[in-house]
Length: 510
Image 1 (cartoon, rainbow, N blue to C red):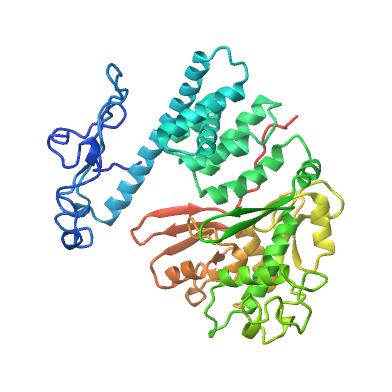
Image 2: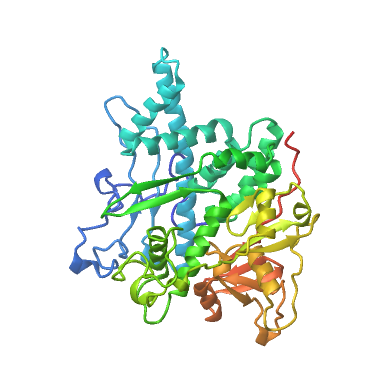
């Protein structure tokens, strides 16, 4: 990690920040006002945060609180403090560096929390030796943590479970968290993926964890999860067909009410069914968009779903020519949006890509992949590739895994090349963006006007916003190899993203 003016080297819980930075010389260092600066901030004196009383003022030096004893004779286990210089003195690149430094510090704190939570569990177990049920000890510990940290017990229980796994079973992931290479969300995702493989061969689990850490250090949690699922398929001792048959038994739909008279309607379904439902709703919603419509795409999707599921039609869909479920146009597709005609979404066929290895198509047992969602069992892949009109199949080489038919030399991008690039990319290739590639625009990394070719190695998926950032010159992109994108930020920071990799060769799972 780059150096930072945010703190100086030291020891203990937080690095010591050097002479003159203790409580007696820095503002807001008391435990009760650790993150206040100077006089109380007022609306008139804040000046957008930069005034004399503002948190971004020139004299605002921020010092973390020192640990306080919780009672007489209770030692303080933390030493030292960390201070942040007045942020108004930092330029943009220094501020980015400060954010990175704070992220590393946060990861270190999270690692210590995992150790402390696990240690607390052990201490409580020692204090209750007569309780043989470890689930009871777990519940007792979770209740203690929840009360101390003002967390719901369910949240505290998940924290305890994850902390124990990190501390006892996955110390390499804990070290990566402690070193600042992983965030807490990344470390949690690594653990959740790692425990999904039966612990039958220690070498397999260790190799799986090592590769998971390497993936998680390079990308967002969402992209990491998709990559980890592919890696998991290469190592799991059970076939995806058998696991899918078991998982289908858990399919369900449930309602989770929230505030303001709203609720989440959630469904746990086979991947191909969930993807097909979403893409059908999305396609119908996009067909209803127009310059004179005041509803967002997100709202339209919700309205389409309501109209389809609350229709009086015998098949669950509004009959062509009907006004749907809402006679006054209050529901999604009703009224003026359809002009009394449900044909705008009747029988809609949305496009979803399914990647099928050639040998799977011929009856092999290699998993296929549903674009944007992850692996699917071979039988489902064959059905989608051969019979479902709303899915577009992309064949892959049986040995290299490379997409077949992936080249073009004209300005207009042919459909097979569009499909190949979008399947390769999965999502927008801007760092951190998870918008599905099927909803993105295809961009020539080297512009056509500058000699760039319309080819697999010079096309990349960018969502409308990030395509605009590139076109306007804020962000710059290079593609040294097909699917390998180097993104350069306005501050000159460089980020490398790669297409989802083919799982590497690892020890066999048996």
